[in-house]
Length: 582
Image (cartoon, rainbow, N blue to C red; front, side, top):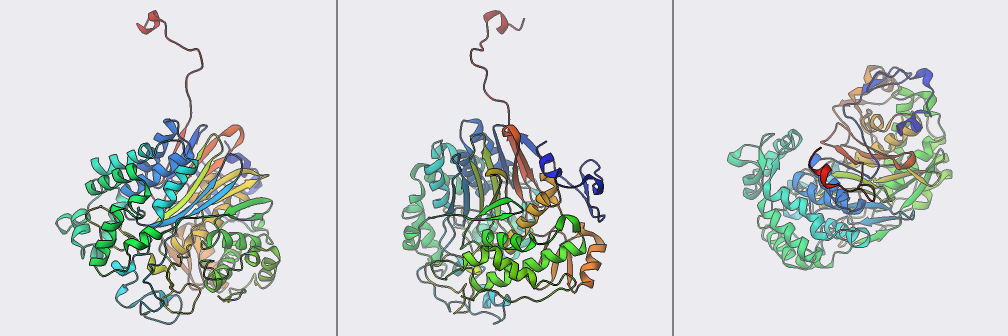
């Protein structure tokens, strides 16, 4: 098992492992709920089994990881309509067989008519300032920013894919036209958002037939979306960005009083960015750059924590949890002050990534007391409802992508003619003028997305990411610590209990147990025990002889599908007498 490489880093004397269970020397224990998948020819891990199947179909048809990943993303727009769609945004992190990394930035931007004071905040204090009067920045047409998902997906295919676009979109078209069974997870999401969904007749007819939320097991058919996807399969991204589909979107948004126009869609541009890089205990960590805060602040926190012996302190102890919490608070103080769209705000990336700056911040941490932290760099929030997938092939390609329509069901209305739900990305901007995240025409949103790839001696070790809004990059960091410091298997690392804070309550999953909770409270934290922190992680581990291990966690409908086997050996054929079954 490839996980043995990571397990060997932990001393076996404090590790008592029953089948499917992990226990720390501090007594913290949890049982993994899912099983990993193995494959030699490819691996697809997404947060829905039908999307994973769509990706595996591409690999089986001779496609590569890019074909598989984009097919899965198109399928997710159908089967995870609450999380992702063509009218959303996100980041795709690619590693190519020659070792190059590329980040395709399809994050949403402010429409040209946007202005810093277009919303009225309910408070001047952060983070309550993100809430606005009438929830206009979160629900309805004024919440819609310019989408970039389709540009990123099609660019990835054109640059690095192998199969025709029509083949890659085909599974999503099939799912939209024939329908699919609603999972309990989707049913719960519909029920949670029902009060807002009921205000829009079109989306209510789809998800609240007769006024009742669709139950688990019901069949959901989105015929209009099938036609939209067929148009995209034929015409490409221009159908939305400058074509007839975009005109329909702009007309509907304008009719409802929103700012998005056909010109905004036509002028939207994809940005290819170089990733940021850092190291943690000799492992190189590669992630997305600003306007994503994920890569920069994961590396910043790892730099801070590198000066502590987390393995000796143990997983789930109050002492190790305290240090992670303090690193999170430091990162969020710096994020709020200075991380934004680098075309509008000078982001001090070099400082945030430096070991020397981490040493300064580390020296101020008190191991025996929780503190409030302010930014350590000059000053220049988002939704947990996102999706992530990780895909790899046998030739060395990795696609690690996080995409979303922002909040659960985005702006919570439907473009009826297209079967699409617009994003509500305007909710991520600061409605107060004069801040790093303030609204400006054309400004890209700032995200916590963290599609990460870690390498040992230049060779991929693990690729992972997850949804979860502000909780994304802290959760991704903890998964790396679980692997590198605590010797967990890949499955254990993605399912292990998580914590999160940005300076207020310390959110903790119940798996940490009462001893850790009490210890952290004694250190001055305010623990808040929650059912889960952030969303479903999708990870791939890379082992010897090309073996791939895929793992998805219990926090979503995550499914790993590995491709093994292969074509027949050259020269194999059936003789006539063998074909008779003798």
